[in-house]
Picture 1 (cartoon, rainbow, N blue to C red):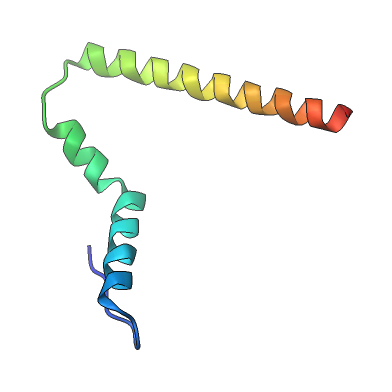
Picture 2: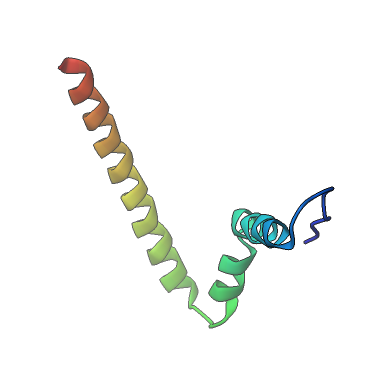
Length: 71
């Protein structure tokens, strides 16, 4: 990952841009995930529950939008 210093940019802003870029690329998450071995069945189970959470969240958002539109 590389971030070049822009003209008239402070070092603090450079560090902020770098950290933002790292978060968006999910490199840190991948490193943390690979830190310990997980059985394939555990990964599959986690992925299943993650999918369920995202579906529920989408349903809640949709219901909330519908409630706002009905007012």
